[in-house]
Length: 487
Image (cartoon, rainbow, N blue to C red):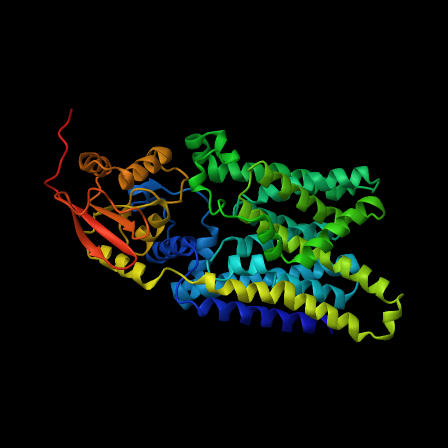
C-alpha cells in the first residue's frame, strides 16, 4: 500500500515541478543555456563539444559530457527546450523514491518513510535550485543517495553488481563522487569506533570506491589539473568566479533547507552518536560530515554541498518522526490522534510549501529587455567579440551566439584574473584611449553594460557609439578607425 502512495507522491511532485518550470518561459540559471548549446552541438554532430569558439573567445571544454548526452537523448524526441524543462525534473523526482527506501531501511515503517519522502520532494532549497535551471545536480543527488542505499544492501550479491555499475557511471558523471568516497571513509571510521562489525564485502567496496573514483577524476580532469595546478581543488580562483556566494545568508539556508528536517536530522545524528548504533544512520552521518568539511575547506561549492545535504536530512527526518510518533503515543494527547497528523501537515506546509511559493518569482529567466539586447547582438557580424561583465558572458555565447571576453566557465580559461581585471577597468576608466586599448587587446568590437551601472565616462563619443539601448541594457560599438599606436 505504501508504494502506491509513493508513486502518487512522485507524480504530484513531478507535476508541481513541471508547473513551476513551465510557468517561466526562460531558465533561471545560465547553466541551462550552456547545456542547450552542448545539446544542439551533440544533435548536430553526434560528438561532444571539445573546443568552444565562443566562450572566452575560444577555449577547450573540460569535464564530463554524460549529462549532456542524456539530455540530448531526450532532446532527440522532445526538442532541446522541452528536454531541459522535463528531463532534469524527472531525475530530481526520482530522488524522493530513494529517500523513501532509505527512510524505510532506518524505521521499517512505510508511513514514516513516506512522510520523509514528501519532505524530500518539496525540500525548498533542492526544489528551487533544480526545477528551472537544468542543473546537473538534479541527477547527481539521486545517484549519490542510490549509491548509499546500494552499499547498505551489499550483503546481496545482486546489489553489489548494481552498486558497481552506479559507481562506474557516477565516477565519470560528476566530481562530487569524491564527496561520496570521503563520506565512506568517515562512515568506516564511525563503524569501527562504534564497535560494529565491518563486513568484508563492505570493506572491499569502500576501498575500491575510493581508489576507482579518484582514478576516474584524474582521467576526466587531467587537463584541468595540468592547466590550473592543484590549487583548482581548493577553489583558489577569484571570488567573482564562485557562484552566488556574496549574498548567502546562513539563516536563509536553514529556512530554504526546511527547518524541521534540518533540526530533526541534527537531533538524530546526536542521538545515534550517544545512545544507538545503526549502519544506515552512520552512513548518512558520514555524508553530512564529509559535505560540511569539504565545503568549509572550499573543496566543494557551497550551493552543491547544500543541495546534497538537504536530501540527506530528509532521510534522517524519517527516524526523528518515528521517535516522535512513539513519544506521542505515551502522552495524554494520544487520545486525539488527529493532532499528530494535523501538526505534521501544518509543519509541512509552513516549512516546505510556503518557502517554495515565496521563491517561485525568482525562477524567472532573463528579462525581455535583456533578450532584446541579445537579439541585437545576433545581427552583428558572426565573428564579433563582445566585452561585457562576467555575469553576461554565458548569455552572450548561448543566446546571442557571439564570442565573449570572459564568462563563469573558468576551467581551462586563459588568464581569468587578468581578463576580469581588464573588464572592470574597461567599465570604470575615464580615459578613452585606455578603453580602446583594452578593447583591442581582446579584439572586441562591442561593449555591453547595464543601465544600473555607473555610466561610461568616454561613451558615447568619437570611438564608442550607441548601437543599441533600452531601459535595461546599452550596447556600444567601437569604431574600427580608433587604434592606439604601439609604444
